[in-house]
Length: 212
Image (tube, rainbow, N blue to C red; front, top):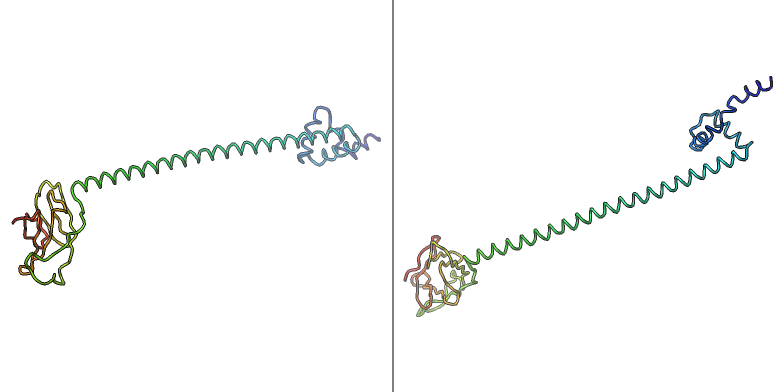
């Protein structure tokens, strides 16, 4: 009768044995036991010092494992972060390389473009405008005292030609040193002197041959 009464009062007794003890302690420490088994574990810890020490030891082992796992995870995350940084650095270096290469290509392309255009044309500055020899007075107010000059040296279609607007464009193997520009007030036109040879020129939009 006493044993039966004890069984009724403590129905969760004898749930713990040597086969399931470790698993039950793990679940107890995890907080996943049912109420009856948890009460048995707590009662056994009060009554059985060896069992209490076993629970404590298992708790320390779990804590150590978790600590080790956290350290390993931290190291793994650190390694991943470092690898990603390396990739970023590689990509950054690659992007810098591409940017530098693109810049070099742009400079080379610009140089080629300028070389081609310089071979065909040269902005030589300006020609000062003077009155033709023998003319009196000064330049009229509407006549500029200097004219920007652009020389096209290698135009296949034109040789010894000119075009005159705000800028004097010359087509041929000219150099600024051989040129002079004079205004003729009596005829309201200009004269271009090329190596002391005089050529009348007028404002025009068409490319016109230089004729004496």
